[in-house]
Every structure is written in structure tokens, then in C-alpha cells.
Amino acid sequence: MNRQILVVEDETPIREMITFVLEQNGFNTIEAEDYEDAKAKVVEPYPDLILLDWMLPGGTGVKLAKTLKQNEYTRSIPIIMLTARADEDDKVKGFDVGVDDYVTKPFSPKELIARIKAVIRRVSPTALEEAIEFHGMKLDPVAHRVSINDRALDLGPTEFRLLHFFMTHTERVYSREQLLDNVWGTNVYVEDRTVDVHIRRLRKAIAGEGHEDFIQTVRGSGYRFSGKIKMGI
Amino acid sequence: MNRQILVVEDETPIREMITFVLEQNGFNTIEAEDYEDAKAKVVEPYPDLILLDWMLPGGTGVKLAKTLKQNEYTRSIPIIMLTARADEDDKVKGFDVGVDDYVTKPFSPKELIARIKAVIRRVSPTALEEAIEFHGMKLDPVAHRVSINDRALDLGPTEFRLLHFFMTHTERVYSREQLLDNVWGTNVYVEDRTVDVHIRRLRKAIAGEGHEDFIQTVRGSGYRFSGKIKMGI
DNA sequence: AGTTTTTGTGACAATTTTATTACACGCTTA
DNA sequence: TAAGCGTGTAATAAAATTGTCACAAAAACT
Image (tube, rainbow over all chains, first blue to last red; front, side, top):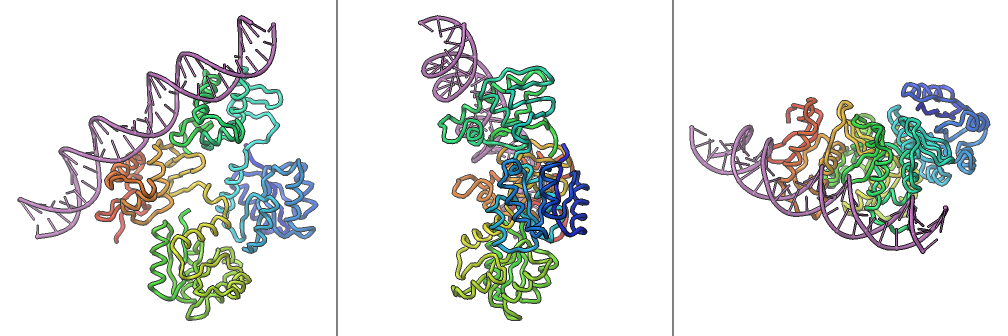
């Protein structure tokens, strides 16, 4: 599950410093040094995240960000801007474009990594239409099929959507309300406790292979879907 | 995640009032009373935010702001100006310099805290979601997980909130009342001694790894969460 | 040493939260 | 229309959490 990060930065020493830090921390990196270069590499290796310098020679970074965020195909790739200025206006402009976060130079490696992880976690960890696999559990959104260790599962529509949501949002606690919003849809009036019942049905459905406690109850907060049964962070 | 705020203000009573308010609200503070003092402390403790008085003896606050915002190393530190005048021109001048926000004296503690939080949020939007680490102890607010040396901890809701508070407010003594306010919430009537019991439960939960005395009793005052195990006053 | 004050500890009952079961309603399909 | 399925809700059971108290232990003070 190694993430690929595209580093777009024209100043070579800085770019190399950044890629070094990223690789130290287990990321795969792709480098680009100008607008055109970056554009090409977004399409081909299709990175999981883009670190984008604010100022670029062949066109500003903001322009690239805007382009990417307006394109259907690339808009889901999170972008973190690197900026040398603490200028508020610039930041506001960037967020209007749809950039996911900012890191202001100079930054510590620790801060950079923390921001990257935070953004990855916040943005759904997996792509939308692709089949998802998680600890031997496979879900194909298109074919509407789920299997555990190649044994097919029989789920109702709601259970399927719930599991789909969980599989694309692991390692994070969701309240019942959040689950209702995301799985049932906003402005639908359903009781909070209904979630419990569906959790129960889903648990029952995926039980029998040691997968039942993938859905974890977080008392007072909600539920969490996780592969780490009893492990540290 | 424990924010350090540098308070630059020459009038001692005002400065102390401000630091008092900040510490009440869980910030760590550093004080400076003139231009040179402030400059030195920006470099060394490298605060997360600067509260800067408009008028300073050894040179105006604006001058300091300008200096800091022009320096590559310090320009990313957000600055909030404290001014006694509601003068528009000053504000404009300040924003030109790159100051992040203004607070006009006299101000209410509530307003000050609100402004600070707003600026922090603006500058680092993901800060609140980031995991906190302290001496091998990790707390992930998003996943709602705690671990100590990679061993998971099982905490009840209140214990979790208490630990979360402590991990974001280390090295400082909090009275039982303050803990009640911050962890239980204001206007909740609970006995003071209830805190003791929860401290006990938390201590028990994190014990067994030599970390039990992270929570230190300060007789007559309250409790302190600290990495320094046995220190002088 | 004896007394007072403060904190630690274990137990317990009340309360809150979650799990589980049962059931009724609506929708689809045979 | 009857049977079957999926869904939401309510009722009940089970489990976990929480605040408080009583007493023990520790520290501070005379």
C-alpha cells in the first residue's frame, strides 16, 4: 500500500530534499520540474497525491492546481501546496481552487509528513470505481459483489453501501449521524439506532472468518472499520 | 499540538494578564518585553504564533513584524497584532506588512482566544486531525486510538478525553476544576474528587510500561501530565 | 508522635450506551 | 394476491461507563 507522490518543484535541490524525506518515510516519489512535465506525469503514473510548488516557471502552480481540480479525471487527487509566502491572499486563492492543504516553507520534514498523512486520511483512501481489497475482503462496486477469501457474500443494498463506505473509509471513527449522511444520504429521516441494526446485520454477514470484528464499536463515538484488531497506531 | 505562543508586550500587567488567559485556555506561553528580547525568543523556542503589541519601546512592533515577515525562516509564523487604536490606517499598514490578524484593545479573553484559534485553523487546516505523540505514547483523534509503544490501550470515553486533554496540555498543572471544565465541559455539576477517580483509572490503563507516573500529582494544586519524571520545582 | 489535610483505591448502584430480537410495513415478483 | 425480501423501529437484554462514597494511605503540619 505504498503511496505515490508527485513532487512538482523547479528548484532541484529543494525537490531532491523533499523526495529524500518522502522516500525515507515509505512513499514512492515521482518528480516534475515544470508545468508541462507535471501535467504529463499526473496522467501517466497517476499519483496518489501531489506536492505542488506555488511558483513554477512555465506557468504558476496555482494554474496547474486549478486545471487539475477542474478536470474530472484528476480532481480527486489531493494537492498540497508548497508556498514560501505566508501571504493570506495567496492561501485564500489556493483554497478557492480546491487545494487540500498548505505547507509553508520553510517546513520541517516531520511537519510535511504529518500533513501528507492527514490529507491522505481525510480524503478517501481508495479510488471510487475500482474494486477494493482489504485483508482478504473484496468488494467490486461495479459488479456489486463482495467476497471474503473468495467466498461470496450475500448482502442487501444498504448493507452493501455500508460496507462499501467502510472499505473506502477505514481507520476512522464515524458517528451514527455521519454514517447516515454518507450511506443513507443527507436529509433522510432515519433513527440513529437504525445504524446499529445494520451494523449488526453486516457483522453477521461477514462473520465466520474472523472478520466480524473488523467493524469495531467505539463507545460514545460510533463505529470504526479497521484491520488492526488489537494493535497500536 | 501543544501550541506555544510568544507574547510581546512591554507593559508587564497586561502581558501577565494575557499569558494568564492563554494558559487558562491550554496554550503554552513565552514572554518578551522588548524588540531584542522578542527577536531572540522567536529564534529559540520558535513559537507557533506571536501576539505582538503595536507599540514597543526599543522599536515599534510593526518594525518587528516587518522584520519577521521578511525573514525566510520566520515568515511562516502567524502574527496577531495587539493595538490600542482602532485606527484603520494602522491596520492597513499592518496587513501590508503581512500580519495575519488584529485584536484591538481592550479585548475580551474570549475574543482573543477566538482570534488565535481562527488564525491557527487558517494557517494549518489539518492541525486538529493530526495524531499526537508524546514520549512513545500516541493518540489519534480521528481513528480514536491510543497506543503506548505500539501497544493499544483500551479507554472509556471520559478517559480518552482526559488523556487527549493531557496530551495537548503537557507540562502544566491543572486544578480539578480546570480539568472538569475542559474535559467534562463547563456548567456540569460533578464532584471535584471524581477527577481523582478518573485519574486513577487512566493511570491504571497506561501503567505497565513505566509510563504510569506521566500523570503527576501536585499536592494542593491538581495534576500535571509530564515527560519529566522527577524534577525539581 | 499525634492530628489534620489531601490523595489513592476499591466497591457499588445508577445511568448510559450498545447488542439483539421481534415485528410490521412496503415493495417486488411469481 | 401470496410469498419473499429488505428495511426501519420499538422493545428488551446485555454490557460498559460513570459518579459517589467509605475507607486506606500518604503527606503536611503542630
